[in-house]
Amino acid sequence: MAAPTTFSGEVWAELRLADARDVPHIHSLIHQMAEFELLTDLFAATHELLASTLFPTPQPAPFTSFTALILDLSPSPAPASADTVGSRRLDLSASPLADPEAAAFPSPRGGGRVTAGFVICFPNYSTFLAKPGLYVEDIFVRAPWRRRGLGRMMLSAVAGRAAEIGMGRVEWCVLDWNQNAIDFYEGMGAEVFKQWRICRLTGPALDKYKGTGSQEEEDAGGKAQ
Image (cartoon, rainbow, N blue to C red; front, side, top):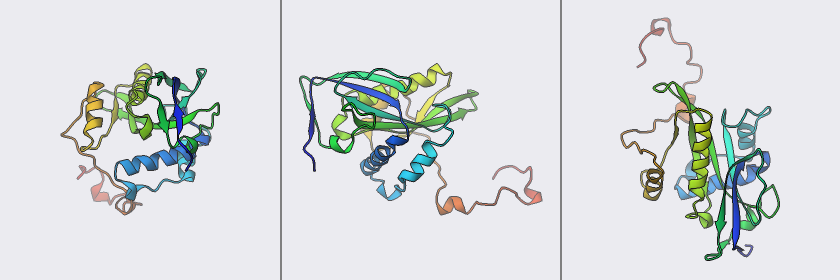
C-alpha cells in the first residue's frame, strides 16, 4: 500500500458535476459506503451499469434526471467552471490530514486533485406541494476527510441548487442507528420523520410483476388493493 499523502496548509474543496471518467471512483466510493452501512450483501453495481445509467447519451441537463456530483480536494485553487456546484477552502495548518487512500483516488481532472466523496440525486414530485423536488440517494465522504465541514458544504450546495430552480423540497433517508448523521441533518434544519417506513420491491419480488400491466377486465377501474 502506498504511503499516506499528507495535506497541510490551505486545501480547496470543489463539488462538481461528474462525468464518465469518474465511474471507477464512484464505484469504489459506493462500495465503501456499503461497508460503512453493513450492506455489502446488497452491493451489485458495476462500472458498466454506472456508466450507462448515470451518463447516457445524450445526457439530460443536471438535476433533471440522475445527477452524480464528485467532491475533489486540490492543493491549489481550482478555477470555478460551469461544472462547479459548490466549493470551500480548508485551512489544515493546525491539523495536517493524512489520506492513506489518496494514491487510489486521483481525480481525472488532474492538477494534484484527490477525489474524496460523491452525491447522487434525482428529481421526484410532491403532489401535496404540486412541485418537483430532489431526492438525494447517496451522500458520502471518505473517512479521512470527515468532520471538516465537507458534508455540510455538499448538502448545502445541492439544497441551494434545488431552491434556485424552484423545487419544493429535498429529501433523503438515514439509517436509524446512525445517530451522528441524524444529529447532523437535524442541525442543518432537516426534519426526520420517524413515522415513515421505506417500502421496496427489488429482485425476484419485483420481477414477478413483469407483464402484469394489463389486468383482467373485472379489475379495470377498480380501487387499488
